[in-house]
Length: 196
Image 1 (cartoon, rainbow, N blue to C red):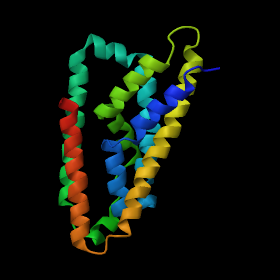
Image 2: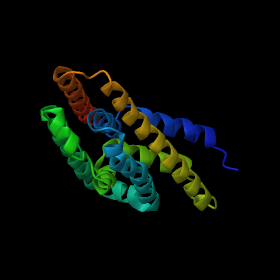
Image 3: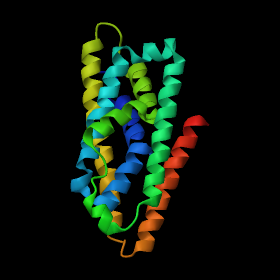
Image 4: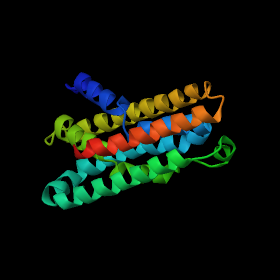
């Protein structure tokens, strides 16, 4: 029996549900595009984060320790992408135009997990804390990745539904702009927090 199941669940719950780039993008997308058009984002995050976990578990953490510059480059790329997304969210225009566009692509969201500083940091902490590097390595890896898929999906779906729910109160363009500016501002705060 895996001994750390409760601690793992609490850690992944907090890591997955706390505000961060994935969750803010999901809320924005659910608000502006609805759940159906947000599905590529939902599935991209659901499977992207566990892929990062597997990569870290397979030795990416060793590469980060050996070459800290590599991790810094990923952090800067991720920050740049988030600033770009914040800009796109802030300047997005009329809702009719939003109806047509697909907000995120599945493979883009998988790739984004590798440059999302929050996802990479949580993956490193998860692997170093909850996966034994001895005889239980395979068992622990399977359990941790399974739980990561569950919590990633539950979190990203919840934030998407929150955005969709808030859409019910958006009857005018002014509210839409305020919501989009708020999401954009929060993404910029996330970037700042990565460097504080």
